[in-house]
Each structure stands twice: as structure tokens, then as C-alpha cells.
Image (cartoon, rainbow, N blue to C red; front, side, top):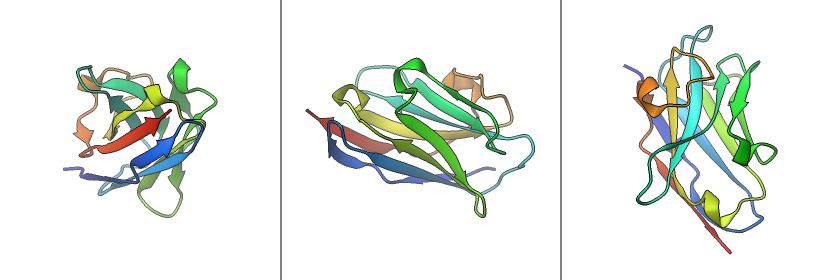
Length: 124
């Protein structure tokens, strides 16, 4: 059973940066993929981006391309979501996810393991 522990959320002004981390308890390095989703109040969970565990392949939703980057700590089972030039519409609870699928899975139901979520608030 994979367990994911997130940290790093907080409040920031528009244009600022935040980095979220997600520590995984288990990873089959050659096949797993990791992803980030977000959910604003009253909305469905929304795909943000994903990465192969090797880091060689990534997939980002259009509205974060050029602003958000997913990376992994090479020595630990920890991956990151680095967010730059944040906008008020980026506000929400951010969730990390892990699975044995592909980076092209944007539907939440295709990801079996989830972190508890961390709040990101961007003020204008």
C-alpha cells in the first residue's frame, strides 16, 4: 500500500512562488508515475501535471505550462511541484497522486494512491 505525505502549502501573493513536496512510501521506479491535481471549493478535482518516476517524461495542463514544474529528488522517494508566477485562480487544495499508469492519465479515478491534500491560497 502506497502512502503519500504532502507538505508545503500556504498563502502567497499573485506573482509569487510556492513549492509542494510529496513523500512516497513505496515506488517501483521503472513503472510508476506521479501526478498533481488541485481542487477549488465546489469544483471537481482537476489535473495539473504528471511525470514518469524516472523524470524523463512530463505532461502539464495548458494553464500551468511554463509556470509549474514537477521534479523528483533523485535520492529519495519525494517529488515536487514548483509553482511560479502564481495567480488567484491557482487557489485550491493540491493533491499528489501515484500510480502504475501513464503520464497521460488526467482523470482522478485512474490514480489509485493519493496524498491528503495541502491548501494553496493566492491573493491578488
